[in-house]
Length: 80
Image (tube, rainbow, N blue to C red):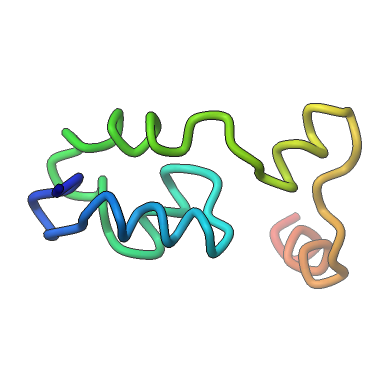
């Protein structure tokens, strides 16, 4: 079944991106463009994502820092 008819992205493809580590609609969009054109599929993507396992989200929910890699910190320093 298609989730995003603009780019022909199926539910199975979205779930594969989730299995590969995508936790947010923005990460899904980066992986396959779903949700970046008309936007009508964003709610469906959110429903597929649900509140499944996401290491960064789980860390944030527990009050732990979500940036763990030095590369992430370097990017923040450059932006400041």
